[in-house]
Each structure stands twice: as structure tokens, then as C-alpha cells.
Image (cartoon, rainbow, N blue to C red; front, side):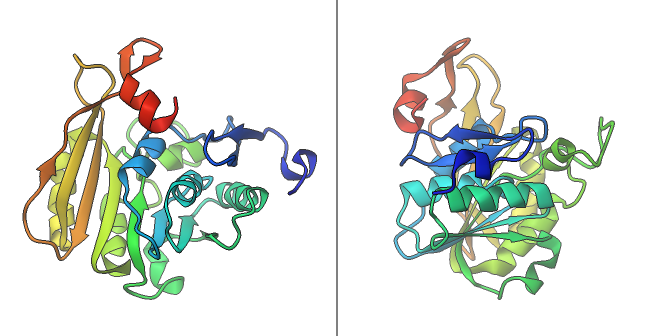
Length: 248
């Protein structure tokens, strides 16, 4: 295993994921993974022997968590930002997961250059939530690129996910509820049928702030709405379900 001093660059830190002794490199001044990525990794189902692609993987949090909790054959993280892809690659090396996880630096809009059609059983994504440059001061900042549709749109991601999935393959996404009508319309245009949805609430008496979706390529029209997931029982205190299922 690489030593910590050999691993980290200026401003970076090594965080314990509290799962299978896995760690991840992050730079707090750039972008760190959030609860949405952790919830998506718990919502996504990966079967033994399946190949998985994570679109917009950032520092590789979702492939690392999925490799730790499932028996998938191989996990690929696609990331357009060079600095994030580099941190993800070093995290893979530090965790000795080179045979299980590959990090590809590239643009999802050019997916055909990196991957063959129908080459993955599962595609996951924690995409930018906000439309275009709304409210942005510096569109070139890593945090802005991660949160806003600057370098790719919802349709870019959904369209390429449909291209890359095998028939019957599954697409998992976390997004904001206020865009659900647009999201479902886009999914249906690309024959990705929503089959399962779970809404996430910060508190039981608040509106949901996240939506977890499972879609099947070429699936029939029928969607199951799962029971709500509540994050906090009171400020600063996670619910028992979050503690039990996600280790917080």
C-alpha cells in the first residue's frame, strides 16, 4: 500500500469510508462527496458478475462503495475533470482495487470513444442537479461543474446511459424532486422505464430533497414507490435507519 505522504497532494486529505477498510482522497477546497452519493450506492443493486459504469464519478466514491458492498465483476468510473479523475485513480491504488475498478478520464458526450454499445449491466450517476449557469459566479470551478449542467445535461447522461446498457440493464440515479417531471419524460424518450423510486426527506415534516430512481432499459410501464427515507430525527442526529443501513 502507498504511504500517506506519497499519496496526497497539497490540500488533499485521506478519509476513512468506514466500509471494508476503504479510504478516499478528497480536496475540501474543490469538491467532496455528499450524502446523495452514499444513498445512491445503497439504493443501486449490483448482481454477481455484472459490469458497472458510474457517470461523473468525481473522486470515485460510488465505484469504491459498490465494490465494497457487492459482488459485481468490474466497476468503471468516468470523470471529465482531470484533477478529480487523478484523485479517484490514486484512491483505487491505495485501496488495492486496481483489478476491480478502472477510472477513465473523459466526456460522457463522447462515450462511443471509450466504450462499446451495450457494454454494461448497470449504470449509476449522481449528476449535476442545477440547470445551466443559474446563480453561478465562476462556471470553471470544480464545485460549479459538479453541481450545475455546465459540461453535460440531463439528456446527455440519460442518452448515453441507454446506449451503454445491455437490454434489460438498470440505470440508477439520484436527483432533485423539483425536476422529476423533466427527468421521467427524458428517461421515457430513451426507453429507460422508471421501475422504482424512493424519496429522501431531511426531516419527517419537510419536503423531500432527493429522489432515488431505478430504471430498466426496455422495461414495461410499472413503477413502485418505496417508503420515504428520513435522514434526521432531529438536527445533527441521524435516524435509526440511516445509522443501521449506512453506518452513520
